[in-house]
Length: 409
Image (tube, rainbow, N blue to C red; front, side, top):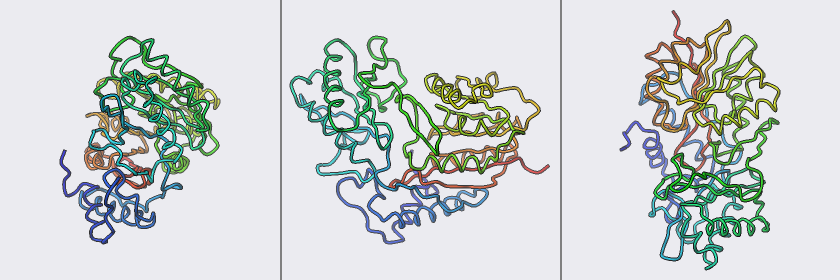
């Protein structure tokens, strides 16, 4: 889709030109276009661009100053490489197309150095004739985890006896190394997929994942709150900013024992588990059954399992009504954190019909904000506060928390 002149990325680019910032040339310029700037300069540009984006699109409210990332560089806790095959050899690409393979000598400013060393180890092993069957079967290599411990995901076209033997051999090398690899899993994905974790059925057999060593979960702690989640489910890419994201959600929604929380797209329970102790009841809804199973465990570990109801369903206007709780005597608070492309048609209207006291809509796709806010306005909700967070430093994107309330009668 072609960007309009009112798109955030285009406005940011124009601001970049107007500020006469030095344009990054050479390797990596298309991958992380702002990472060569000082972080202070990047924050200034993003604040100005967000204000202009709000004005040009005629959006309600006024964005507050950007909450900066505690780690503006080397912050990404999830990285991936697409495997590009060249006969019996492979290279690893950062993008989704062959043209975005890593240029020679390029080192990302946004990824932890430990991730680079893990990719180097996998690439070196793949050169060996011993691992050639595995190299031919690889689609993606990904690294997830915290800043101290890592899970390596090896996405393969198939799992047969020969591939499994090589997978275990590579996993043993990673385990014996000094790379802080805590676990390694194999994931079966379609050969032509754009995603390193694809929800499509495996091309052969019925096995989707196989743990090669280590735990089948990642352990993370945010602001003293413990979470477990599967390496195969969504998580925030910038762990350093998650505590501030959680506290911002609490400050904006202001939950109390007079409220019932509905957390849509709840994933492994990041917000549900954090906010449930402040509410009378909470309901989390997610389309991924694996994520919900971890959300249940996280809530039970926190001692709030009895007051939280978790449901798996497609999040669309047709499926949601039968999975949302009945309206009771408590005022409702709604939090929704959809994927980059936003909500399905009718979801916002359906939520507005429940007349929640406050809605916190989190956006990680800037270009979807005007469309969705128009839907809220059409449903008699207005913007109260706009709090941007720099979840993606070095890139032309933000996480934006928009607090909405019902229009006055």
